[in-house]
Length: 182
Image 1 (cartoon, one colour):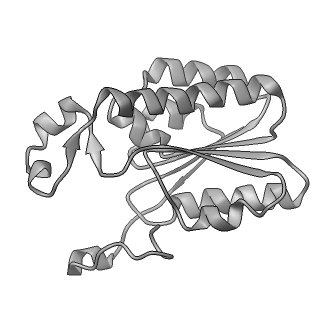
Image 2 (cartoon, rainbow, N blue to C red; image 1 turned 180 degrees about the vertical axis):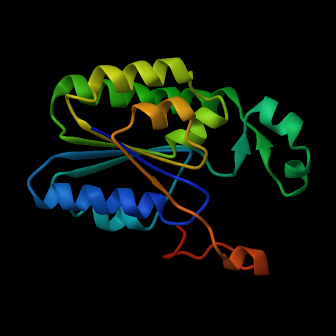
């Protein structure tokens, strides 16, 4: 089945990890591919869980696609950079791993963390990802996370949960905190 965890609220990755922990606890083999990330405190614990593998495909610093940066110029003011060829290569490498993982039949659950953001920013072709999902949704449980999930993916998903931000301390100027956001 295909599970989508999307929306602007906090907790999408945490929820996906919970699904992975539950699966690993039931003896299923889990692979979580984290796009656009270089570190997460939860990975230190996940590495100790039998049957739960994590692979990260990102670089330090926050970046967006060239076209997105053109339409959101204010992002440059806060240090957001344009994605480089290396960023695109890392995303593609992560997606290639997802394809190989399904073909290997080694895993029961595949978590594609932040893939919705990857698609929104144009790092992967939506048609390619849709094809992958359609081809594999009966072979493996696939969990997708990230803000602004494309409508076509929501349409083919078996379960969609929307995370809605009601209030967030970022609005008071509180920065990300280790152990809470990363």
